[in-house]
Length: 326
Image (tube, rainbow, N blue to C red; front, side, top):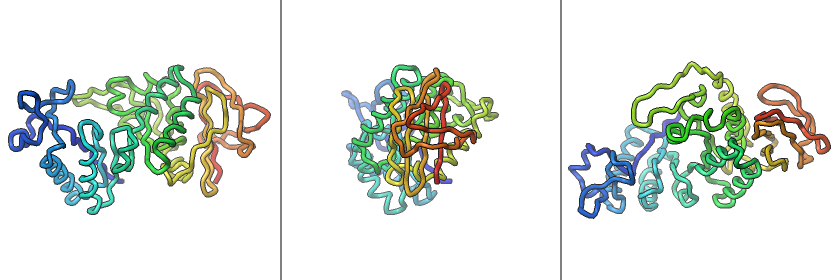
């Protein structure tokens, strides 16, 4: 197990010692008072253009690496109000101590000048649109192509179907994906990037957690999802073709049906084929890649399915299939 801290460099609480000891670390309003960001009146906004702010922040980060031997930072709000040169200074200071993992809660190719991974926010919202019938599988394929064009292969793009913001403000996975949630989870684990599992997702969390107050998660797994997510985790861990960035295989679309997303990923003899019906109606898969034709065994159920250039494969609503060749 690796430990990655959620690091918040953008602001502090109003009772943080820096507010009185080092007010110069903070952003000021037109009257010279410490200010906050947008509508977040409960926080005091830091000013990273001040060299003292940056030095103090990096000293705090060094402590956690040197004294507690943590393995990385998930950097909150990493690109907003924070100049990239702060992250240059931070990585220059921290990386020689330990090769830590840097995850930016931000979407933008420039962040990969210093970060290992970024949030694929746009993909999250696109999958929500697909689930509601406002977009289709073709749009997902186009997004992956565009993202690879902009970011390249090496950056890790973290994808997800929920997180703390989405759960609290936009709705639960069940609210946003309905009966299709397993198909979209399979997409996240097989298609591209690195998948995020948010607290409770693996046991069917189906309530909006309170954002600012203590709340609870029912860990009894009422939706019987834990075994499914264990399968997904093992699938990705045991198949190098599904690994992220340069370590895995490029995703290649193998069909052209607008409601069905089917891909293959192949590397060093390991081939994974994933097929997802992203609609609440029966669909057909029309194969466009003769190289994957044949009879395959579904990873989840053990059932046999035939992929053929001549005969379409019938799919039930929201059905998902994974075939492995090692």
